[in-house]
Amino acid sequence: MEKTPEEYQAELMRLYHTVQASAPETASSPTPAPAAVPQPSAAEPEMQQPETEPEEMPQPPDTVPETEETAPPAETVPPPQLEIDETSPEQPAIGWLQIITRSAGNARAISGVSVLVTNGTEQQLHLRHTAVTNESGETEKISLPVPAASLSLDSSETRKPYSTYDVSVYADGYYQQISEAVPVFAGTTSRQIFAMIPLPSYLQESPEPIVYQNNEPNL
Image (cartoon, rainbow, N blue to C red; front, top):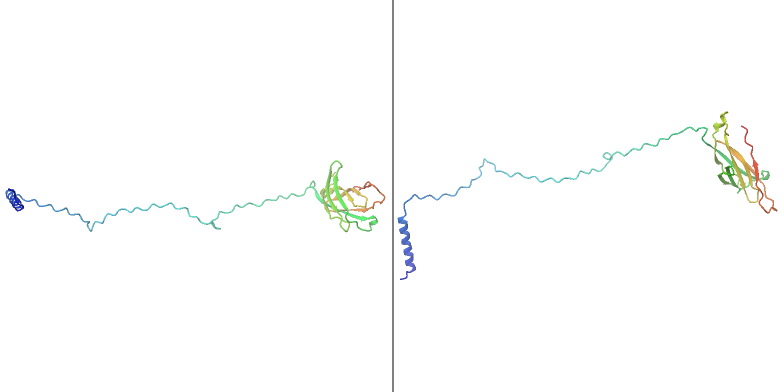
């Protein structure tokens, strides 16, 4: 015969009480209290984790603008030393030559005359200067190399204390003239005067130049 739910419940309760009554009386073990969580003591400071300092990034070297105080001193270049030697008798000096052109009898100046100054030999001729006479029939002073004047003070010196130059003059309607061995001394101006001679109108060909030979000075 099936039992009703109320009957099942009553039977379960009876069985429970029967089991409780038959169990030995033992000191019941107290239920262990939950372990107390230790609280930090006020006297004990809390352990602090060491603060890790951030790694310092390498800093670029400080750039200091160069000023007059911090800039490196500029390299000083010593001035060149000039060695001045006294002029020896062998070293050349300077003399001057001026050319003057006049009409026959020195009546008037002849301008526009071409002047050529040379020295050397026919095999090795050196052109020294070219010029043209001005309205006064004169050239500027032409500077030319010559021996030192001190040569003339040495009685044992065999060299000439001057240089000689050949001077040629050219102008349309006039004879070409050449003055050979014109002496030029150091520190002085030699003036060579030419009396320009007109060409005859009947000449068909250019005549030979007129050559003058200068006598060397008797020193």
